Image 1 (tube, rainbow over the protein chains, first blue to last red):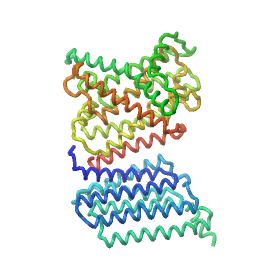
Image 2 (cartoon, chains in turn green, purple):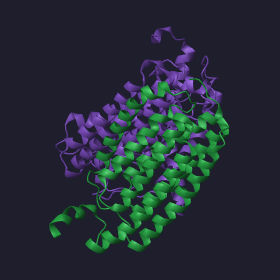
Image 3 (cartoon, one colour):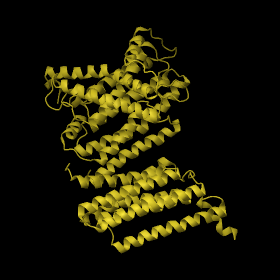
Image 4 (cartoon, rainbow over the protein chains, first blue to last red):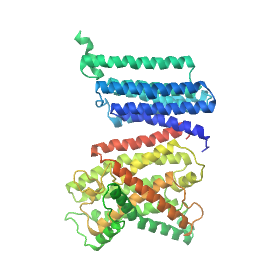
Length: 222
Length: 321
């Protein structure tokens, strides 16, 4: 095996950690721990961005790293923790599929993502191109989490994790998106979480629960 | 490679390796128990307690259950012999020993499976409720742990392009140091498998005789005297063997890699002892901080091990790291 330079090794380790954290989120039933895992994922993403910025000398990546740190490690988790306390939701109900089943589906998802990324990886010319497969896997795993969860809170965490995956994908494929796009997405995510926070209160007001399958009965009530 | 081609010196070294394994295995269990007692703030039992137990059991008169078949009497010898053979195959001290080349890692997993099957069959043989219960649980744990263990071995094999354990150990010991996320993941997976396969705490409690929770002890309930001694010695050896597989796969430094003679072991044995002391303390720490899982949660625990191993495989395939 060829030994890559240390910073590339660290970047690879970050990519592997992101994938691991996605699986940890998939298996976690406590919402508080889920948000904490999101914090760790954000922190790993920040590290990866800083490493890549240092390696490639692309100064706008430092701004992205700061944005990731401020938004995804500090502000949004703080907001989510506050929401959890206010709404008093600490546990997700049993997910639609049991944990082992979800894990197996997750593994298949990752294999699918890697197969999907193979041609893209060959086209990309960046040093981090092997991270594309991991990024797609993280996005798909976040999707999977949103599909298998019932509570609105876990779905928002899945949504944020998906955004982390997209960001990592952009970073590995093209050293990050243009600044305008990045700022736009950051604003989008921020507003989305704020609006969803308001929604949570509305949903709970209506149904006394954050279980989203209650929403299916909305039409019949009119 | 045939056994005949080896010089008597190498056969002597092999013999020493097996004897050291036989002698050290109960000590490792004693050490883990001592560390657990210290961590739990209890007075520690003597380090030599496992030896005393084995000696005491050998002196007693064996009692067999009324309905016991020959299988019941033969099983302890088979289980013990498989573990001794495994100890000879695993490159715990040197990678160029005669027996080490006799089987690869997959055959080794098969050896462990053989021991497990005979242990379970013997437990079911007498027909007591607890024996059957223990055997069923053991098979449940075994069939989930085995794929995870194989997956761990496959990752190491992919990295060094061989399934032979000594070649893997040599390859990893000689290559330059680096960060290998795939190996880190598989190391976690291997630790989980080790805990499950050796009836350690998250899956089974080695110290319990509480009927409803035990797995390994339930299978040994009907055994006494020399049969029980062999079974216990075999389980000490199993822990030792698993630890040595872990060393060969993840921290192979210090194993004698060149030409072997008894002198080459003079360096390898102290290194192995140091690794065992650390691994035993680590094992005790893991057992102290974790709680026993409900039996129905054991599949989830082993699914996690499998997941870690598969993630290691995928990460290796994708990142080449």
